[in-house]
Amino acid sequence: MKPFHNAYEAIKRLLANIFKKGEPEKPAAQPVVEKEPEKKEEPAAQVKEPVTPVKKPEKKTEQKIEMKPKQETAQKQETAPKQAAAPEEKQQAKKKTQKPKVKAPDADYVSKSEQAAYDEEVKRRLERAAKREREEKKAEQRAARREMEAQNSVGGKKVVDPVTGEEVPLGTIPAEAVYLKKYSRIPTTSDAVLTAINSIVRHPDMSKNIVILGRNGFGTVKVGEDFARSFYAMGLVTSDKIAKIRAKQLNKIGLEKLQGLKGGCLIIENAGLVQPEKLVEVIRNSLPMENDYVVILTGEIDSLANFFEDNPEIVDQFIYLVDIHKIAERGMIALARGYIKEKNYTADKPVYEKLKGALAGMEEGNIDRFLEYLDNVMAKCDDREKSDGITGKKEILTQDIA
Image (cartoon, rainbow, N blue to C red; front, side):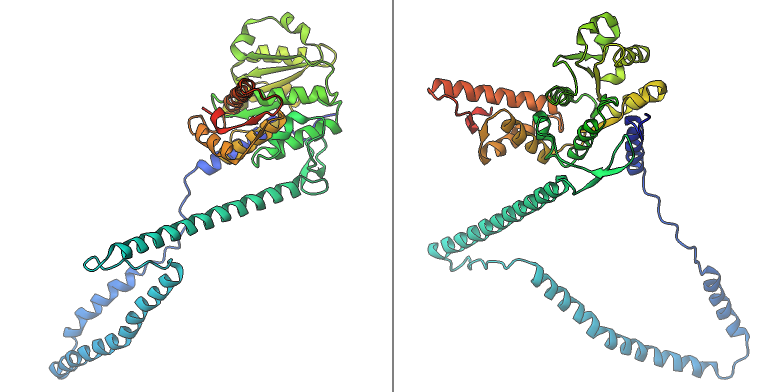
């Protein structure tokens, strides 16, 4: 059965959108309505006037000169109320939008008590404004969370099945796929993860190979590991063996090194750098009639697009694409919440606030590095609780975050 579409087609659509957004916007074609010929006719008419014999030109010019100031004054009188009204309207609009200002006490006659009262009022207003901003931000986050939960519920949001092309419910993460749950809260990634895993469940006889896109140099291997572990937990593969290999290493080894991987998963890092003929050999070696393992490619969009373009014979072996290169701070914190819960730890709000500071020193969207950082935080939590004689609590504190 040939899939409805594959990862390469999804990559091409992504590239098309990127190029479309990157192109400078062309100015809208404006109708050329130039009235220069009409403007040029006016001075020509003025030249003809003195040539045409006109009786008593002096009186006519005097009348024009006398009427001109009257017209100007009349026009000024008409426009004056409008011009005067405009600032009043602007001032009223500003009064509606601007926050009421606290009048500062007169510097010449201010006392210490008056100054203190003034400073206290300014402080209270700033605190109220900050509180209002925090409440609005929380309300936005709650609304976004409710919307995502509604979309992810069975029978809610619809997506196209990449195998059949039919419109199906997006669904939820299967209960056994515990390692993928942390990605379900990330707006830019959750749909792709849900679509892939649910389609694989519906079509277990189709290829389970996945392409995971990330930014150039960013780690996405752990996402591949989470898919591999979930495959085994769900019974989609027969072995829990996971082999991780870099592209340059794969170029140097023979296929006999992969014989022990039968029934498991192979994760290739920076797959776009693999020699095309080598990767074609690996794909053929992974087929069910050979060694029957899943191939998960991780890499950057341009290199993988070039690889698929040069090797069309294996394109349909990669149906599923998960694009994670757009994860910003909010998504990374959501990932942290899911990962901490997955590892049976707990953490309060101050911990996540401090994690935002840690993220500032990392590349935005580098999942591998961030999850390794969280592993170290959990290890520090374990060491602290052990030294304090605490067992089994697993509560991460701000002091565990470097």
